[in-house]
Image 1: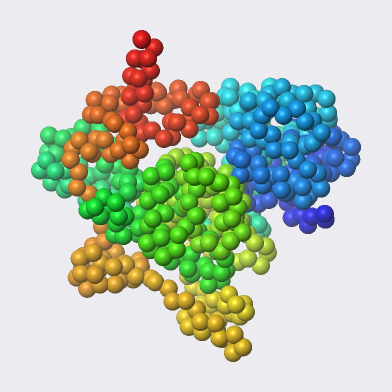
Image 2: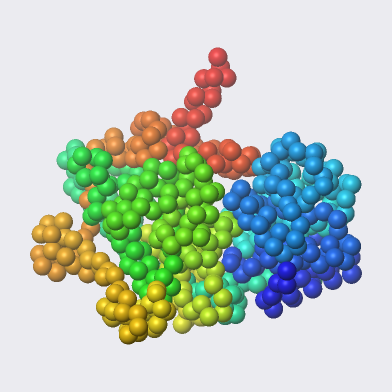
Length: 560
């Protein structure tokens, strides 16, 4: 199949071939390109060129998740007309090219070693930043692919948050800067990709959060906001003033805590999370005026919140979203169904992040567990993919007003031109989904007399919880009675201390909380240093207070 490449892809391929096969400077080449710019197609065409030139006989692709592995298999077949075997462990079939997750590599080292030893093999490592030096995946890469003829690594986020350097390439001593040879790499920044229309610009909506928390033991209300943090008066709250309370009442902890009506089962439509979704729904509706099949993505911190957000979406839109997480069945099929459907929303915990390509995504509601810049940029990468040179739409991100996310957003905005970071609400037209006629934005009926399609009326209101008056969706207070649209919590001291644990169904007591203040950083550091993917995954599921609980359980078992 004749693939039309973008200029940057052609340049990267030519540079890689010159470095690897012509000058033979090194057997490894780095492609560092923005998420959504087209790294997969670029690497697949590079592989085809090396196959056609007789430079290689086999191709092995390694990616972080099964969904991405499946995408690789499909796109590789389109580009090369060669079948790929998805290797999950245990196979001895050396007759096909292979694609695998990093975990499967660790479980089946001898097979990959054999392929690389017996055939001229090209290894493509996707999302290579996972393969850190002296970590499980990094060691697996070295042990498995040491005898590969060529290695091409792909990433859009080469700098790890923990400062560790991925294998095979040169970094500064603290891991904060890539110092690899420019001749042996190709870089395309996000800002460059936006300028070239390869990626769409992103508008960030910092969703203002203001919580009022009343501790039931009689203290005055505690004000919490995303900008100001926890406002605790030591004199008024001296009785309960411990660092653990301040931590448990962190704005972001509250923003991720589901809020229900008095029955504790029905999601509260006046909750902070509901207001985030209202903004996202409004933006998706506006985007669908120009692109009828546009979709939205919700990234939740855990399964409980994902299910809660899914219920809220159904209540707000009267449409059931697609929900995927580690415990849902047929996950890959559901993701693929969403990719090829007109469903409005997809809700996920961490399965739609790295490498997953759903080009119709335009809106991201970002409420994650991880607070790293790498995770942030990977999530943004899900909504920047364009549908082609005529696609003038942009991506929209609604995120909590939080100092960490604010910093990351400013850096992304700093890579774009001023015109790209502005909200594009000035668009005055919409496209008829039936005949594709461009109509005035406020039109009730299609302007094409032969069509006369009736546009659905959008719900852009926020109901006041005090007087039930319907206000504009972006209102900060009720225009009728003046009620401010804040979010109230009423907690016991004990529940405040346990909040993080309760959200994840863990039993955490006050002693654990206080000890964690002293030790959790060291424990967290050792967890990350282990490089074990399962251990690190477990770490993300537990609040810091619970790490001491884990330690006490292990100590007890070992003692017995």
